[in-house]
Length: 270
Image: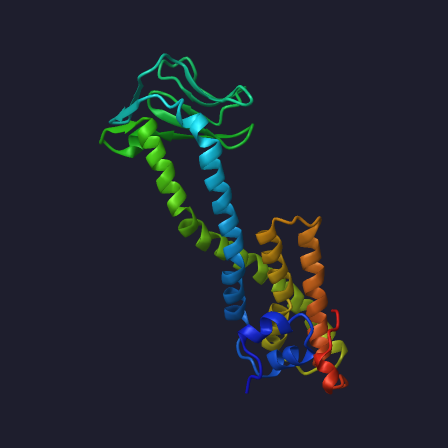
């Protein structure tokens, strides 16, 4: 029977040999449900921080761009603009163009330009890098008439800001789950070799559970650092090495020669 649950694991993973023995012998599965649960918790600070930065950009910087937006009409894939062309929306701080609108055919690419987007009569060109751009046909928007002006730009930005955390949270969670699962698998391979060296009869699933549990300290500390805005140099390297150390610690805790007395509750590093 399990002695420790998920809540206990959040703090016991930092020091308790007893937890790692319980995970190996009493927990079931490969620990992936636990990993996703912890990631779901630890992803929240990062998403909230991104939301706060987006809100700050919306208040401080977005108005300088939106007030330059002319009235643009797209009808049946054809764009027209109520302004002299080529029309440029500028970064007022740097004096460089951000968006170019030119339906005259005078500007056909973003080569040599600092702008990241170009609207022509029938296409939208987005710069992906200095060497690569992607072109979209405005006809793909359908036959309805679309009007873009300052008011609609503000409305679009408001809708994007409101929807941002709902859209980005599952994406970040899935990406994080894949990344940390790969790290857990690598640690499992290393720990399996260490378990053999100690002559431990641990199943592959038990070793995987220990490796997943060993990620907990790094995940929780990462969440705290994100919340406080503290940047630690080479933090990902520290996470990799630290989780490997905790995983080996968890394997060693399951050694038959490991004393099982009150010292289990002492704080011991990986």
